[in-house]
Amino acid sequence: MDRILVSACLLGSRVRYDGRAKTSEDTLLADWRAEGRLVSFCPEVAGGLPVPRPPAEIERGSGGNAVLDGTARVLRPDGTDVTPAFVTGAHAALATARRHGIRLAILKEGSPSCGPLKISDGTFSGHTTPEQGVTAALLTAHGIRVFNEHDIAAAATYLAQTHQKPDPSPENSTSS
Ligand code: SF4
Image: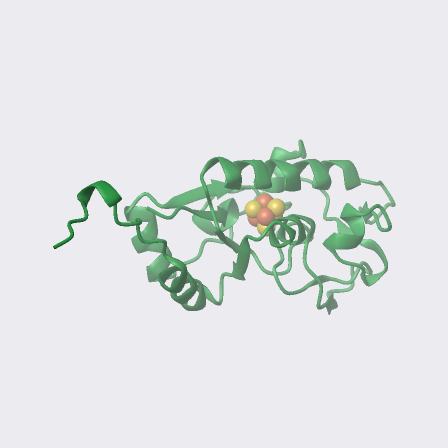
C-alpha cells in the first residue's frame, strides 16, 4: 500500500505557529486516512520549534532551495534566524518519507516549510512568491511529488498512474 506524507496541521494537529490546525475536509484524504495510508508530519515541530511560535518567512522572496544551499535564511519578524530548525525539519521529513517508501506528499500551501507552490515573500505583509518551502523543496529534489491541499484529486491521479504493480514471479509463470 502506498503511503502518503501529509502536513500534520491538515490532519487536525494543532501545530501551526499560532497554535491552531488547518484541518482539511477533503473526502479523499479522509478515505486514505481510514485506509491507514497517511503519515502525519510537521517539519517545524520536528526541527525543534515550539507551539505556538512567532511566524517566520524566507528572506528576500527566496525559496526553500536557496535556504538548503545556504544563500537565504528563514527569519522571524524581529530578525531571529531560525534557519537551522527549518533545515533540520526538512531532513527529518525526508528521512520519514524514505522510511515509509513514500513517493507522494500533500503539504500545506503557503508555509515556509511545507508550501508546494507558493510561500510568503519575506516581507511579513501577506504577499506571496511562487517558490517552495524548505521541506517541499527538499522532498521535490529527492523525487517525491508534492501537492497542496487544494489539489488532492491530482495527487490521487498521480498515485493511480504510478502505482507499482508487483512483477510476475518467474517461479509462478508457466510455459507451454
Ligand atoms: Fe503545518 Fe507544515 Fe507548518 Fe507544520 S510546518 S504547521 S505541518 S504547514
